[in-house]
Length: 121
Image (cartoon, rainbow, N blue to C red):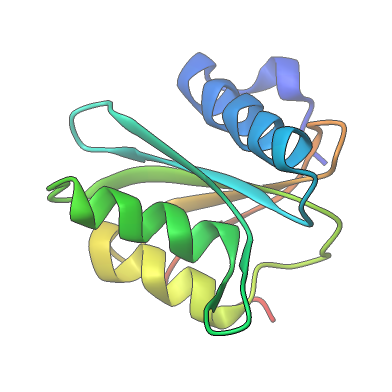
């Protein structure tokens, strides 16, 4: 576990944004990514009959659609114990294998941090 107050301020910001997206939309996950210029992209779980995306894959897609060239970090807020391999792969595709992915609970406390290129689950 990582105390949220011990996080870098920019990492704390993406955890807070992800937490807000989850709460605002009453969905299982919220996510945020930060690109190489410092811009952030925030998303929630997409669960439509014809389209299902995790919050993290949605945030990565938003970054790509907005012209981001790379990612510095990502955060997911939800109840999961690990970040699915498909989500880590999406972050690695844009940010590289060493891009940190923070996983936090609903209260914003970071439970784990993984490198995008290393599958957790």
